Amino acid sequence: MDDSEREHLSERYDPAGWPPSSDGRITIPDAESLDLEGWEIVRARPLPVPNARTAWSGMFEEHDKDDHAVLRVDIIETSTAAEARDQLLALLGQFESPLVEQHRTGDLGDVAFGPPGGATVLFTRANVVAGLSNAERHIVPVAGVARLLDRELLARLELPMAR
Image 1: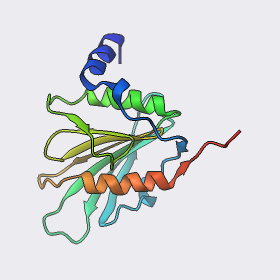
Image 2: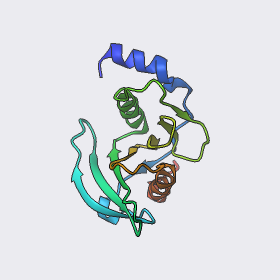
Image 3: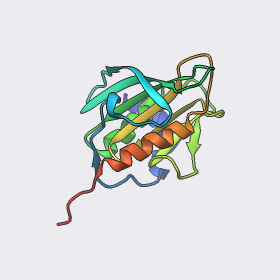
Image 4: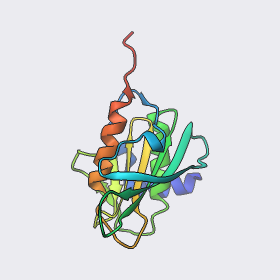
């Protein structure tokens, strides 16, 4: 992201006004070991993200449902919370909708964004960025699954050592 794009996105999304990041670091799980209750991994692949420690994209199907909902889950582990927020800002720049806004409920990640309707969400937790979106025609709200993922990330949060 170049400086002019960063400036434009910063004016639009106000990262200086975002809530503080969680202290500590998270090492992301691989897709197969992720426990998203009611959802099963179908496939996963590495996600090429410059400067990321690791990243993957996975497709998850809802268990025991006739309407066949499929979600795409992208997880990016960066070295620091500041890098995760930079990555989030860059991802927000990929949205074509002017309706994307910050979720201010405080129950998802350190900071979260998405368009109205709940079909997509992006959030950070410490040094991790996560994105969830629908991947089939049957659209379901992703906030509940995003909260499950956030709980998984919180369980892996390693707090810094006191000095």
